[in-house]
Length: 65
Image (tube, rainbow, N blue to C red; front, side, top):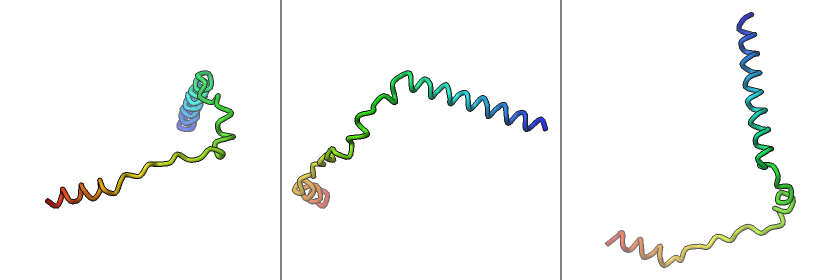
């Protein structure tokens, strides 16, 4: 029976620690961005520039030499 009391007390301590961490995150402004998630799907993805294939061929030629 004492193990149950120990586990309950430890779980309460962990829950209070997570509550304090959550309150600290809210106060620091981590969850303040309300605008961006609603329009994120409207923005285009960034275009990733492809490397020139000549560079790749040159490096392979240099490796074979």
